Length: 257
Image 1: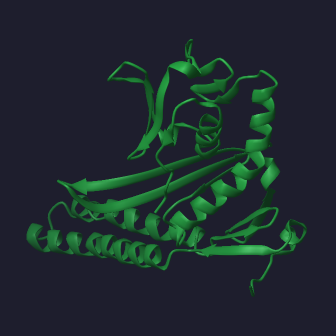
Image 2: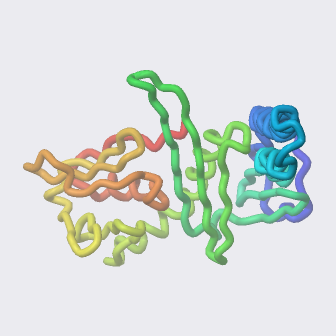
Image 3: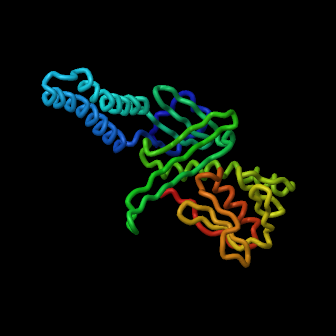
């Protein structure tokens, strides 16, 4: 794979994938930003013609918000025009506005996945993706539609992080500790949410449907607990750990397609 590696990332090993600015995002931003600026210029001109010289300042001011919105959108895009994420054997690099930062997989503390599917009636119209990564040192990165093939990036990034996180989670679990996933935790006692715990022998299923995590108790129709997957950090580790230690099937896949 012929990829230009930034000097900061030479210690991360061989690059495995590259993701850069979404060309569709560039086109959409430039078109919409330009349209707002054009409207901001045209609206006052029309207003001046209609007002015939009256209230000139007020008429001109009507176009300023539109120009500001369009200009802000274009300037914001320019901040991300060189956006580039590289995945390596041992971590990833993140480049934006000429600045490159690197992180090793074993430095990642939490990963969140937020995949939103939009429907009009029963017809699927759009899917948006947003992934957030928090490192042990507090640094945070957000990957969304500004990047091309962001769904593939999200899947690859989560899998690589899970490969490092899962052994540590398993070790803590076997040592009798509770493995935390913010509102939820998994331990030998079962699945906990807040101050309530569902023992493993009472777990009917752990399932993901349309971006929501459902936990059911045997003998109950309603969920014992549920949460949006986007609110559960390290969801791949959660599902893998639940599948290993739960007595009932763990269903559903965390897909980003």
